[in-house]
Length: 471
Image 1 (cartoon, helix red, strand yellow):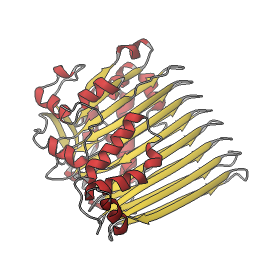
Image 2 (cartoon, helix red, strand yellow):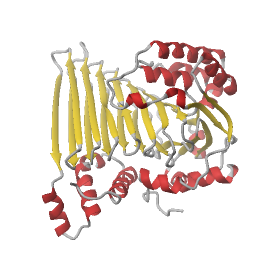
Image 3 (cartoon, rainbow, N blue to C red):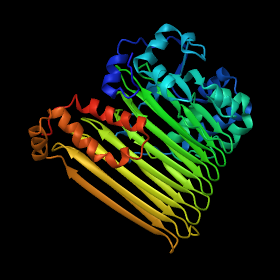
Image 4 (cartoon, rainbow, N blue to C red):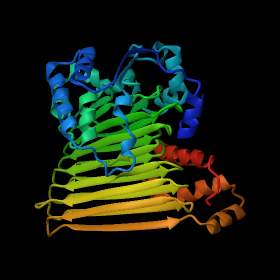
């Protein structure tokens, strides 16, 4: 076992460590043509209330009517009838790692999750395939009224809270969001009561072990008035014989004067196609910080969004994406300014290597009545190699004459001259690449607390330790 939580894993290293892990034993698997019967069966297995079953069926109808977003590069490669929509592992949910079957526990130990929880986290949900198999939290959270659990438990124990927020922060507005709303399973539910400050992060970690699997977890985080918290997402998967499909969703609510930092370290293996729908609603004087780090996956489509609904609300959204050889990273951020004196900043840092493709889509929309709103968008791209590509689509819509918005964009290539200089200072090829890329994302890393920043630096170092030159 690793002796420090900053000894983290790159996607390729995680693939290798998980290579010997057998796919989980399955109790239920649902696949084939997507019909109402499959949705009904998922709801029946989970013993859901009727309102939730009907909600799923409504979104299935919406999914069937919506057009596919064919403007997304690589999206046509998703064969929905070739995936399993729901995979229930033959594992009872545990409150200690010792309660899990040995082969399941070994999978999480391979990617260091029990040690990370012990040293760093206030609470953790760990998901295997379509269901959460472990929920752990520090006892003082319960004493302060903090809730950290899986979504199935939240539906049963806190139905009013779930009804209030589920698909209300993010009403599905495109085909794959509607698909998620029909099929979702697993995910975390966190509620921070008014005035409570949680000094250690909460985390949801997702592990997929089977090829051809669809993963549709749903996470809801509610930070009530004057409260403060940090939440992390992490994921891993072994190398697979065929692709797996991830279509998750995160809904965040930040109350008046509340603060939330939401960090995602997307570390899927190269056999996963990743869609993650993320939206946060921020009330008066609330603050939401998204930091999205996308390292793994064959193709990834993620656009964290903040809606600044209350006066004085603010957000900062940082994206770091790495597109290796043969990979596509289509991402960006959206900020909607819907109240006076709101502030928003979007910073994107993309690295394209080999023939990797990065696409940035950014939107700043300042609505009429959002007086004195201020917005800033910056997208920086680093190209490593002659075939690397970076494409940007920034959009700024201003409907209030008192608002101020600005945009910057920079594109640069890592030249052989720079690499020669770094090598002349005694660095190996991989060390020179890592140093150059770490410097490129330095202004994002300084925004992170120490441990997440160390995680990002370590992931980049591990990734570039396996890459050759820049030709």
